[in-house]
Image (cartoon, rainbow, N blue to C red; front, top):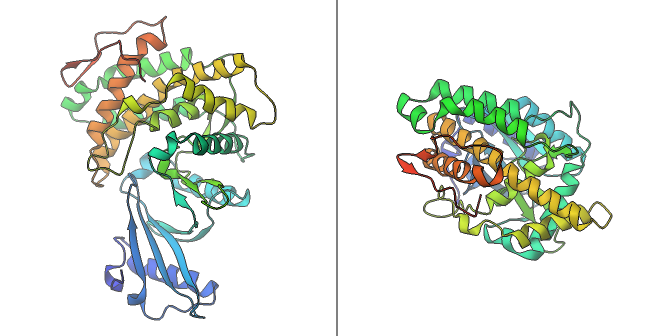
Length: 364
């Protein structure tokens, strides 16, 4: 749809955005004289940012130029350092991964528009597509990224817990047992790492909306590196498996359906392809070990996104029920903890919102 320039995109710096768009166009030899001629399409499914496709006719009249504009959500800098994310974005581009950064404005950026299809929730369960994702994930984890190769997960969880405690009402803090979570994070940090666990550059948010596929070449592109860092690769695998319970393009995008969590054979198949893509045939014991490690790391994943949901409910205005999303993640944490960490004991905190959480669930 064509829209007026003063209605271009919700942004605190619309004039700056227009100037950056004009600069990007001029790099391609185009001149955008009439901002009203821009066509803007909001892209759905984002939970942190607002994302738009913008296109305009090229100067020669035979092409249509497309870019993606990302407007940062309110308060998201709580979760990560924006400067570090931009450095990661630029480094990924140099590695031939993901879109190029075309321009920045005060509260967002302009990215290269990738001519590929964003995956749907159902795509994650397609064996062919899943195998492509597994191989791409292995490639991602092996990227030689600058900076320290230290695990970020545990410090990030503690920082987010501190932020959640500072934001939460007494009622919410009590419901989510925030007073117990420091002990839980310490326990997970002690129990989960294995003697020879592999550390790699992890995406940490590999949901279907952050994966694109070229329908002709079947090439997979992973996008959006806001949460990317070095972590145990088992944690990143756990995150991807947990995301199979989500569908962010429904009338209730926050609702998670854990009946869609992949079964043992599906997880084994994914991890077998993941390991095989490194150039050798893994043993069944190697596959089983990584499957088991990933299953345990679902616990850290639930705490991670549970805290994210609580904080987001206080700082982000996007139409998404963050608090109920957090509630579901913590329900899974408390219900799965006894079976995944058999040496641990579960305190009388295994209820959320007054409901006792069963410890017999077979899904993380």
